[in-house]
Length: 576
Image (cartoon, one colour):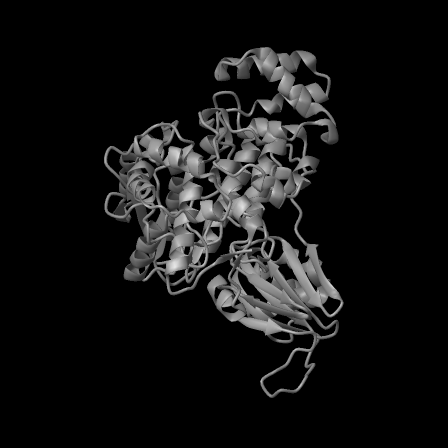
């Protein structure tokens, strides 16, 4: 934990100004080091470290210059000339950084628990609770009132004159890449994905990769294996870690990829290590999969691995949509009515939805952004529409906290994108602002990183025309054509992926029964959740009946976390 004031105090107790800027904290990896070393050679003063590069970038270009730092990182800079402390995070918020403001002081830490202990803050942030129960998280907030996370792609500038948050990375909402040949898209995707994996393999330690048997994680494993075998990177070897359970649809594909790559395989059974356990739900904040993530940390330690690769965000980046029929709006906007009808008919056949409904939604999307209803972009994908939308939140709680709609919680920059791409930017915005790519607690000491969140790759894929990524009945269209030769034959034929429904049921039922036996429910007593609705859903969950399980998991997770906080050594969290 660290603290800064308008006059930075050093160990000798005297105020000093050795140079304009000083890096007080650097945590991360720079993927474009060589380029920056050349561009900043006159500003580096002979230093070559990543922290020195970050300092030089700030001194030359200011906070806007932080956009030149490509990689997973968080940073704190002290600007002596302007008496300002700058806290910043990469565009995806992969490396944690938290802060607390008190008058003109700012305290920060890459470990939330360290900051909680240093500030003695225990009051619960109701905005975080509402966001967590509704959307799975809350942008820029933590469970503790007054402790915030640095927004991804932003710099928090603290001085005696106040605090200003400046954005230095923008989503490429107005950019579109149009090649004459689709082969060009494939070549560029392949090159950028190879780069995305390669920059994460510049290590002298073994690398561990999460392998689920889906196309995303399998692509990462296959590309990493190819790079290591060809000695194009310094990583010496690769191992895969997978979650398995009885009758899993994914396990045959997991084993196929393992055999194809000839890598060491570590399988963690969800029967032995559940997805959630009463006493393992996170320390400083609620975390799903805590028991499994702890097992991954143990595996990494045993193998000597300091880097863990994942396939996260691949679904979004690669256009894995069952329903992307808003693409029709592009033709309507250009008044190509005949082409729009042809496209709508193709989607209608796949979705088994009347063509007039497809055209109606596309027409609404084609309207100017202020007139286009945001709800059509936030609608659940057709293959994942929940049968039950019950939330159990106390009536008026969301209104009380001002979090009743996504628009009140998340930024609306995605609305600037063309209508046919807004859904992509909407979900990207949510993923980034929720810092969903941050490593879970047990893995924060490792380089837990995501090739599909490599910024050049993201910026390319978010500007590729939607119909190139996905067409009716052809999700991941570009990915399949570009990556198919990476995969074993069996994987090339895969069209769907297994769900975690069975492991979740197996883990949640005993927890639900335990909650039903108890009289005290933290979320009920704090006025967040309705007792009758919550207990009814727990009973249905125990019986295997429909209960909007995905949202109920959030309630259970937060309930257990509050209980552990109240009864554990970390102390009690009080409602604000």
